[in-house]
Amino acid sequence: MNASPGEFVREHEAALLALRAAAGLCRRVQNRRLVGSTLTKEDRSPVTIADFGSQALVGRTLLERLPGDEIVGEEDSAALVDSKNAAIAQSVFTEVRAAVPGATDEEILTWIGSGRGAGGSGRFWTLDPIDGTKGFLRGEQYAVALALVRGGAVEVGALACPNLRFRGVRGWILVAVRGAGAEALPLDDGPPHAARVSPVSDARSARLLESVEAAHGDLGGHERVRERLGVAAPGLRLDSQAKYALLALGEAEVYLRLPTSEEYRENLWDHAAGALVVEEAGGRVTDVHGRPLDFTTGRRLENNQGIVATNGRLHDAFLAAVGEVRARRR
Image (cartoon, rainbow, N blue to C red; front, side):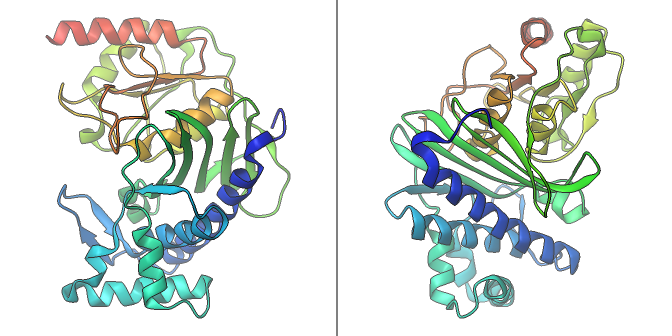
């Protein structure tokens, strides 16, 4: 990092400790091919034993190290106390106890349930225990995403990307503190690297990132933006905030997530950590109107539409192209 974490030393340490523990659990579950144990939430998205286990370990760390902080997590322990999910609940308890021997069922449920916060304009953590669950189920990219928000500003952001390859190493944590830069740390042993965005300034040479799932972005709109700017390379599709990680590491220049409808709003935990990592690596993140992301509106970004994240140098060009493409759709 460019500077010390300053007043956020404890938060920086807690975030790294929490993400290493959670990433370890996710790796064990994925490597042992236990990922088929899933529930389906009301929005039809899947949730696995690793989602619950990851949230438990992050919740435990934050409750112990920063007990006064609110946590806004994606998952809830309520489903695990339903008798029809008893087998999945026991699998969650087993995986968490592999990391925390002696933990009781009640403690684990408390750690998972700690994520029921509402967010807003105060101080809170936001957590996505597995961002990109479908990628996780396919054995591809996913991330554990954790961010500290204070007064609407993300102050600490961290992404654990266990399957991300960079400089010949598989598995990285990217961490940023506002004003102190961003760095990439191997999940296993190895030296840290400063995270810096790409210096590319010609839109035609841009490498564009987008989601695998069509429901997560207007892929046709992305293609029209590419055509308008003469971008030569096809878009690279991958799950999760690993896209923010690649952008911060200079492995791509643009991440687009154009909304599929005028009503759709992004989840808080899907962008808070990644946005700060990219910004502290020298990039820029806004919505499709060029507005900064507003993290004061609860569990969704109610005052924003879509995402445009770039290396900074290309931001204005892509924002203009996005505006033109969206105007033609109306």
